[in-house]
Each structure stands twice: as structure tokens, then as C-alpha cells.
Amino acid sequence: MKLFYKAGACSLASHIVLQESGLPFEIEAVDLKTKRTASGADFTAINEKGYVPALQLDSGEVLTEGPAIMQYIADQVPAKHLAPLADGMARYRLQGWLTFIGTELHKNFSPFFNPAGTSEWKAVAMGNLERRLAYVAKHIDDKQYLVGDEFSIGDAYLFTVLGWAQHIDLDLGKWPALTAYQARVGARAGVQAAMKAEGLI
Ligand SMILES: N[C@@H](CCC(=O)N[C@@H](CS)C(=O)NCC(=O)O)C(=O)O
Image (cartoon, rainbow, N blue to C red; front, side, top):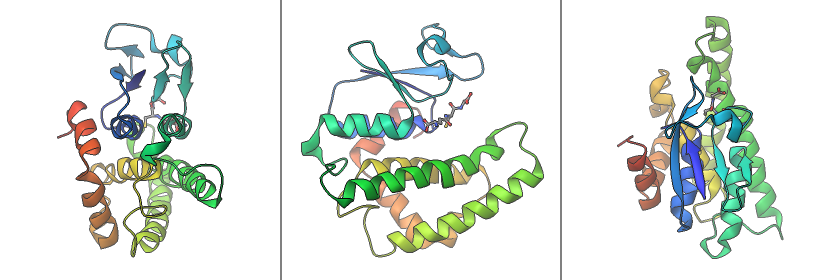
């Protein structure tokens, strides 16, 4: 499998999940401005949406959208418990979190990374982020991980998104449960390996 990524972007979550899975994989960086991959390929021919992550399977098939990629990887290695099986509520709770992180957190960072982000858009997004993060902090206050007692793909995604706060003047120190969670997830060997490979640490 090959993961197309940009260092520190949302593709980091899929990269962490690949590391945690123990499956063999390669990574290839994408220049999101030129839409060229590190080997010079036209990225839009791989993922016509032009954004990362994209996972090229050994069959040549390409899977896009982070939550789908992460669930695919998790389901290849059920013994690793990266996602609960779809035989009970836990999987649907996880899907709820993946949707929440994607639509309520991830996309509220957009105006800060988009050169066209206006101050009005940023103010609305910052308000949304603060309310949503307060909710997450309350949820994980008495927990190690988002769902159940084990690390899951939801944690890979939440950890990745929380890492962007430092770039936008959003102080996570207001929520000690979030900074403790960040430190806990960030200390995992799979997380460290993915961050090292992307040159983030
Ligand atoms: N819905 C997509 C969003 C992916 C996304 O927002 N990717 C960003 C990086 S975090 C990107 O590649 N942006 C560049 C672009 O859209 O041109 C997913 O969840 O995978």
C-alpha cells in the first residue's frame, strides 16, 4: 500500500493508523500547490479531488477520504482493535466521532490555512472550535481514549487535528484534559514513528 500525504496535514492520521497496524506500506509526499507527488507524478491522476490522504492499494485501486482509509486499514487487522467490529454500538459511536472530527473540528481549521480566509470566517470558525473542543475535553476528562478503553482510529484523527492548534493561536492549555490526551497519544510508538517519518519531530 502507498499513502499519499502532506507532512502534518490530515493525512497524518492515516499514516499513524498504518504505523499502528503493523502492515507493510510506503509513503509519498504530495505538493498540494503544484499537485505533483515527490516522484513527479500528477497527483490529480491518482486522486482527482487533488487532496490528501489517498491510499493506493496493492491492487492499484485508490481509496480516498481519511475516515474511509482509516476504517479500511483497521479492518485489515482486527486483532489490533484499531476500530471496534460493526457488531455493536461501539463502531457507530466511533463513526460518530470520525464525522464530528471531520466536520466540526477539521473543517473549522480551514480559514486559518486558506489564504482566502477572511477575519469574519476565522472568528466564526474559532468560536466553533472553542465550543466543540470544550465538548471533547468534557468527554475525555475521565477517559484515556475517545471510544472504549483502547486507542482507535478516532484517536489518530483527533490527535492530528489537535496538533494544528499551535499554528493558529488556539491555546489548548485552557483544557487540561486535551493537553493530557495529546501527550498520552503523542507518546505512542506508532504516533512517534509517523511524526518522525513526516519530519515533524
Ligand atoms: N474530506 C477529506 C478532506 C481532506 C483534506 O482536507 N485535505 C487537505 C489537507 S488536511 C488537503 O489536501 N488540502 C489541499 C487541497 O484541498 O487542495 C478527507 O477527510 O480526507
